[in-house]
Amino acid sequence: MSILIVNAAEWGPEHASSDYPKDVADWIADGFGGDRSRFDVWRPQREDAPPPAIPGSVVIGGSACSTYDDHAWIGRLAERIRDWADRGTPMLGICFGHQMIAHALGGSVEKNPNGWEVGTCEVGLTDAGAADPLLAHLPGKLTVLQSHQDVVTRMPPGATCLAANDHTACEAMRIGDSIRSVQFHPEYTVAHIAFLLGPRREMLAAASVDYDAVIEGLTETPESRSILSRFARIHALDRNCAA
Image (cartoon, rainbow, N blue to C red):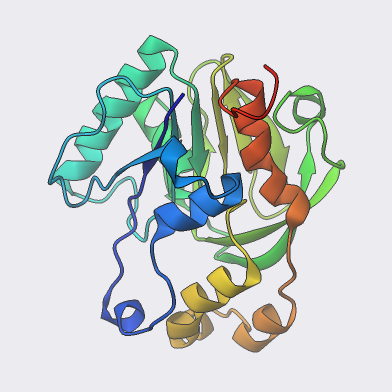
């Protein structure tokens, strides 16, 4: 079955000038194993074509935008998320995607009063997270890569928190059997996040983030990355894995 990647990331000039590979859909596909034939891609900010009407599953990636920004495409993406949820389409939200799912389905997203959460961080699984098929194979304390200042402050009705830490109360959530989302970035490698953060050094410093310490502390997070292939397995999307 096809996996639709919703690529909501459009780079500004500070990133566009780099020759680093910038296609976030490719980053996500690589996290699944890299077989591009399994994926369709929709870029909702461009809106140059509609997404497939009924995808097999959906992965909604990150964005520099916020769910509460006054952009028409955000409202249209929210409508799509509600439609997919009504159909029971398996969905995985990542960072902005996590927040968009919450926003679209009746939750709330705001700037975190604790400030930015950036770099290599640790999150803890809740009891529900430790029992959830998507995360049950992971250790109770999980190392992840992050870059966000918005957070889910109120989960949608019926949602369950799967992971948290002292900085962010909802690091992952479940809604029903088919929807999961994570605040962190399982698709990221150290190279990805170093590219992302490089042009933001002064902005992060103004927000009291020690950029040098963040960069020095970056580590690969293969256990977090395994969430992508696990999502494919539990929804029978991986041609090489049993349902």
